[in-house]
Structures are given as structure tokens and as C-alpha cells.
Length: 423
Image 1 (cartoon, helix red, strand yellow):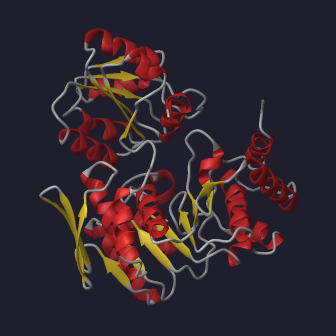
Image 2: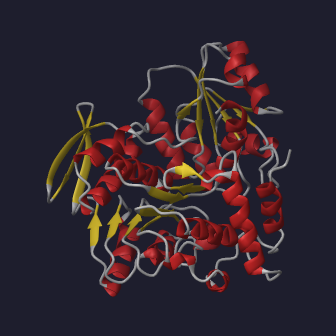
């Protein structure tokens, strides 16, 4: 049975001919029609960046909740259900509330053009404004400067996670141009936490902050984080924290945890928050171990992982994470969108992959076909072949290597199809 929210969301998809059309004009119009809910939401922590936005936000939320606070959170895209994008005071938005708020936004907007992300972001603001909480976490959808979330004039704090090449067709083809878009969330005199950056990106972020009088707390200058002897060491001008390694796997998650801790330290959250930030977060499809479902049933002795990373920096992080696991033959099942740097993503994976199976992502018009994925993988030197589906690819792998390590990767949209049945 189709939920009411699904019907309303389908209507929203038809309100604009483009999926992405970066401007804030339509957001200002619909928010005015809704009587400006964005002015009524709890204090905002706004997160932008190329990689690590979601993980950093998840750690901040875990920390704030560990300190006893209630937290709204907005993220995108969703994996299995739209409801995942809107968390109200710690809980995913329920169907009745979501349907009511979507209908309110449709009526306020009328028939005039607005993108799906814009109107659903307005719906999130409407939900946040009508539900009490202590903090609001907003994750940028794309870029920052013209992103639909960037209508908050006075956030409590902004955060910029590592900036790298991605979405060049919208944000520009250099790190400096992309960083300028990400730095668009910096507000006058509002502190900004800055994660590890390439020098080219950092220069742009610092110049923007200087122009706006926004204090910066920069990785490597104002705070430091490292893994030492199986622990995570964070240090800033307040002192040193000796904490467990983050629950989320990978060296890059140590850096993301550092940004989260810098934010929590700035907010004076205390030891319970710092510990919870690294031990309690859950963020699906980021080196997530699949332990039940149909895929596990056909490969009971295999080690199954799911990762939604889809750009070269994410591939490098994936390789680094896998290299730290016990040695085991690693096989990749890859599906990607045709808007991504396919060769750039696949190139680092050759260092760890015994085989690669290319699949077409079900239900995605922008999917790269399995044949296209395999052709590019072969051009990068990988032993690649096509498969009709993830299930078929997995069966082929375990028929030859029952105890294989299998990593399904390349797209959050592919991850979403997997989690619907194997979450």
C-alpha cells in the first residue's frame, strides 16, 4: 500500500523540470508563504563539505544527546525511506506528521516551480519549527552558498568538512571554486569549525571568514586529532582528550570525529558528550557490515560490507579502511551514477580488489549501466565483469570464494536499494 507521503512526494517531483537548479529565490518565497518557520527552529549547527558531512553530523548528534539534549537533524539523500531525512527531537518523523507537513508545503507553494529538494527542505523547517528541541543540525545538500538549507541568517555554528572534487558540473572544476561554494555557509561573526583541507581550499575558506569576521577553528591550527596506540587523541587550547576510536570505521572517521569534538568543545558540552560522540553514532552505508537479509543468506561465510562513497576521496578512504582489516580476498560490486568521476573512483580500488562486478542501479535514470562501469574498470586495470544484479554478482563471487570479503559500493542510491532488504 502506498503511503500518503509517497503520493505527496511524487507530486513534488513534478513541480520543477530540473532536479537541481541552484538559487535561493524559491526558498525565500515558500518560506515567506509558510510564515518563516526557519526563524523559529532551535539553534542551528550547519554542516557543509564534500566528504564526511553526514558522519560528522551523526557524531555531533550522538554527543549532544549524550549530554542530555534533544536534537533535530536534517540530512540527504535518504537510503530506504524519505523519513530518514528528518529527525525530530531524536526520532525519525512519523508518517502522519510527514504527510501533514508535506501537504501544508504543497498548498503554500501552489503550482509555481520549485525543486524537490527545496520544497522538502521547507517541509523540514516547518517540522522543526513546530516540535520543541534544544538544537538543529542541518546538512547541506549540494554546495552551500545556494543550497536550500542556506537560509538561516544566524546559525549557532557552521562546520566545513574536507572539500574535494565532486559535483563539478554545478560547483566548478577547481578546489578553489568548490571551496567558495562550501564557504557560502559562513555567516558574519558566527564561529566555523574547519576540518582537514587542501591548501587551495583552506585559503578560500579563510578569506571568506576574514571578510565576514567569522572566527575559525581550523584542523592543524586550533585543534589536532590523531590515532595513537588504538586510541583517539584530540587536543585543543582547552586541553587533551583520550578517547576510544570512533565507532564508525576508517582513519577518515578519526578526522570527522575531530571536527565533531571541536564543535562540542566550543559548545562546552562536557565529557559525557565527547565520549558519546565517538561511541554512540550510527550512520548507515558508511562501511556498514551487513549481518542479515537475503544477501547474507546466500553468502553465510562471506564478509559483507556496504559503503555509499562515490568520489575519488571516498574511494581512497575506502581503500585505507579495508587495508587495516585482516587480510582476506576482496571483491567489489559497484554501481554508480553517470554524473560521477567513475575512473577517479575506481582507480584507487585496484589496489585492493581481486575482482569487480559492475551492476546497474535499479530505478535510477542517471545510473551508469553495468557495461559502462565494467568498461571503465577494465581501462583502469581491474578484473571486471557485469552482473544482472547485486544478488547475482554475490552468488558468482561466493561460488568461487565462499569466505570472500565483498564490498558493495559506488553510490548511496545503490546502498539504499540494498538496505531496503538487508538493513
